[in-house]
Image 1: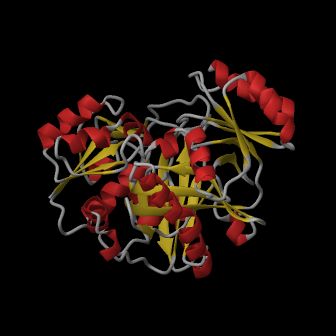
Image 2: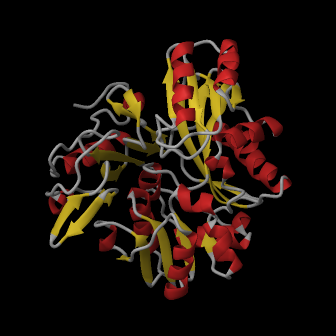
Length: 426
């Protein structure tokens, strides 16, 4: 079978890598892909902002299965368009993807279905923000309602800071696009966990959990990014806690979406804060996470394609996913200046030596090929991922591989996994 993957980042590279390992798959096509994905898939151009362009690509390629990587095509309704034309596609419809594309919808949905989350207010004007903020103790979290590529969450140390941040979102000054709604939330403290599940619209099967590192700086300092690294271990959650999250968060989410006429088929990503009050939902994503996917999929032993097709066919309850019992870690190598402005077109070297590191896989997030030279093309450039029997071993292998790689201004955090290890690596 031929599998088409929509997207161009590290998540899509990991998906292409995992899909290519299926004995059922004869060809993987990635659109638009990147310089690294081209090693495991045939990359073809497409504009992910235009549903019509993606439909025309499917008409040309005639894939047996399409997997949607990023959130934008989902929010534009690519799944709806493919289904109308009879193409098998993995991902939620436009309406179901509102769990991610609208923070306000997600918060109000959780309230309707008694899904535990932080206290919040949805505001449509600056005046509403000024009134609502009186009911929150600083620090306060201000969130853009719409998609913001991981950059729409602002932690505000004072009420005035929060008011200014909200005005910046309404005006478009902060994200370049004016928000019609913003969400004010209480600040939560605890450990963050990315809890991803597959859903066929009725049943839920969890993937292994992971912990992302959103801040650019070591010790979790500086602005939020799309993710600077992640790790996944077999002991991150006790079995009883996994069951609690399934029964009180994941399953009610899927059941609630079905009750509201928006059956959710795809990946339900529950971003959780493990607080003293128990797990609370910080956010939903409606697709595989990035860089969580890189660390999660290197632990997968069963066939990913079988599981995704079971979701589409409504038979997920018959599917068993198998995982190795060790650990995996992904460390992101980014361009200097990210998440702000940065240079592109810088030559990348050392990848062949890095790939020789035992247990290492190099997933490309922002690379392009110019002639015979691989160059940087994004803020997050590489997701250097490794597996091992323990988190220490996985991290050691990832950092060993990273040490072989070079491009001008390359930056990465040295403390991925520091909460589990209790001290940063050096």
